[in-house]
Length: 326
Image (cartoon, rainbow, N blue to C red; front, top):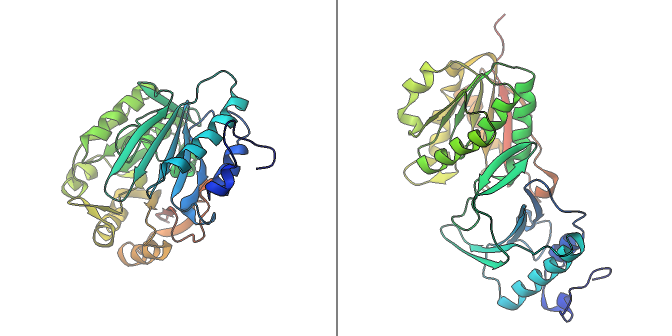
């Protein structure tokens, strides 16, 4: 590759059909400070790389493949990253984790260096605990960075807001909302493990006051949810499919029909869906049927690195508002 060579590696490009990934590695301009995606093959804009992603959770890099990756090709990618790292951070060791995963399982291994414990990363001034060596979700969804930015800016313009964060996971939305001036945030997720990490995230950022955490099934907790409302902002970020918990095609309508009674006049809702099979129309048509009084405002852009050949396949984050009463 012009202008970039991996020491000790003989002609990597003919052996590795991942030119776009190698070019992205070579083009990393500086040491990433915030957690971020560096290369997104999953969007389909880089032919031959559809199974690959490269993330940086400083000080650790994470290479993920959604299909088996031959050891010689993995070694070539590692060598390219090591060479660029030597240019960016002379004398500092490269920390690299590799995960091979499919829809139901993941195999993760440390290729070189080490992973700090605890592993704390930053984004837009907030700190979050992540875990790269176990599971398929690592504690912070990088594609939702613009959603978190929107929440921060939205709440900053409406200090004292009450926020409902459903399917809260590790509560990143709650952290940024409280940093921006929210009065209270109710975080609900039936998985207590991620919620416990969410509590730690609030402590890391000194925003524990005002946050509450309920490890409950949303659909059996409407009484608790209603008593804590109404809300100036509701965030819906459910999984597309989680056996025994949520199936988007069946359950999203059950969420939407509750929104008008939970929102204050002038309140907003962030409607999120990360499914390559369900497009934006799935959400807009469902909202029109289940909560026709809510008004569509905008679809948030995803981070540029998450470019996709089809916007309907990519993460969808829609903003709706409950019109103010006249």
